[in-house]
Image (cartoon, rainbow, N blue to C red; front, top):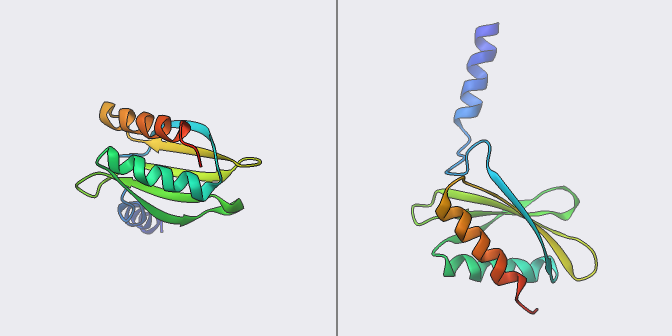
Length: 118
């Protein structure tokens, strides 16, 4: 029975593609002015300027929207969660690969959208 349980766990873990993000990603949280849909639009444009793609992944509990940030090879380099955080403000949490190029891209995206006006 133990062998069956261990085998099931390996099969289950093998089905999850973590991309370049990995199991222990770096994290950055920022608060941006604007409603979540406006912030998401800004992040879409900011991702393109970094030669990355932002794709919607779904909705989590409490209205949190989840997005995947992918590189040219369609590998996930970051997961992004956007939630309302008060009046006309959004909380954005980036979980990203521990790589200098990804860290720089995430920082540039956050900075670009922090300065945007919606």
